Image 1: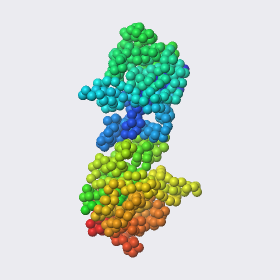
Image 2: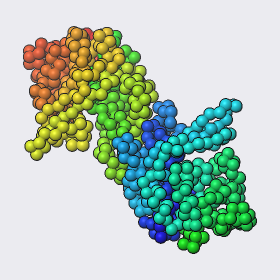
Image 3: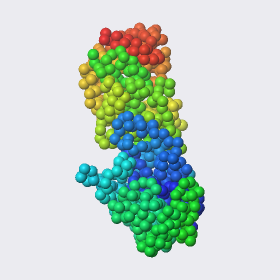
Image 4: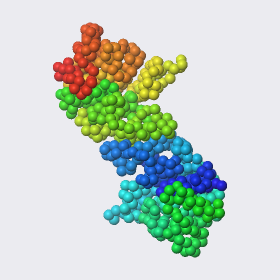
Length: 315
Length: 315
């Protein structure tokens, strides 16, 4: 059975950790958002790809909730002493190695998808990790500040300003001209199960589906698509989906999140807390919906959730 | 009194540490070799500039003999796990910050001399640190391996292969087209004392003097030039001058080192161990020569040596 997962960073890594226990890892392809990618200190940083890599490579810091375990931040602290403009973005010393490995390869013309495969290999990851595209796509958030609209890089909005600004709109710069990375469309077309991970539907899964051809390819496999709600009890478990979903015209609820994928889903998984919504979601969207424990406290609960999601496809 | 020092990495940093105690730091300009500069993991590394900066900024690791004190090497160790091609070159985590600060500025078109001034400011250095040139100059070493001549970057020859190859020749790639960095020629012209630090005469001071106009500018001030021998008792105190001086036709001795600067020196300082050579150096080169303790064990002995050298100019 071939499985494709559409993955952001928050939630997706945790879910994938269970998925590779619920199904053969070698049969799993994770298509990962790169709209958050950013150049910091001249280095190409791919936050979602790296989160997923560190999760699957068992190198993620679960306590901190981002970056690598047993991490130190000596270079970043020193960059702050230099007054370096990008030092608000904390790059760990171990994490830096990933970016120092990636950046010169990209500069030499090696596509991101190839570099990603090499990084994954270093962490012993058997699943295929694929960026949504090898082309540059950048999520930009327009915010209103003192009455004036300013456009921020997603990382600036999220990490530097902690999502405190009033958001006017967002866009995925470059996405119209981007092409799916090699293997993305064929993996989707050949998948027995497609899982939309519990990631931000607007800025994590949204960019993946905005790459020309991807949404259509997923829709063509609609009977094999299951999604897991990132919204539990009307709030995201992590991240800033509550700030961005309304901008996209989506209610911050398990129903609102399902609506983002209304044309794609055969099945939808919500948390037990949202069990009362099951009927209304099925009624509104015609999508088979069921509730289970979606709070991934450890690999066991992640695995159980993955089993449940695949089970909804009869897989 | 304005002082200009021509500086490599090895020996120069230690000497400059004494010089800034022997004379007002604000009156000192160090013109530093950049022939050893190298791109590692896409980062612009300036080993001699950084050595001098860390020495003057009291951040140098005197025990290890290179790099920063209290350093860790987590990113480099991790890069080794990645199999990164440049991981033989040990970049410390604190040291990385210097290169991460410098590289994007250079990429944005800021000249190396300006970046160097900003790095020096972060370390509270009052003396002017100036690269010999803002243009790319690269020291290349031709070695013979299994009967075949191969050209290596200086760092490859020195750090990766520990100077074990038989050297056929060397060159300073790009030096003909290079121009002295802003301020270099005027500092030399206006100096009351010019000190050639106890650095490798071939690959440390050699590249500085090879930048068009520099050697002539120093020669024009010959009556104000004093050098300190990097060779003591027929061997370099550090580095690989013993391997490279013969290739340049220089005997590995305090006399051979003086010969490299025969057209430039008013005075020459040798170690007490080489006191027996004083007369023959004066006889052979017509350069006022004297012996003192040149072994810089600490800042006090460095300061005494700097006083002695300046004293030979009557300064």
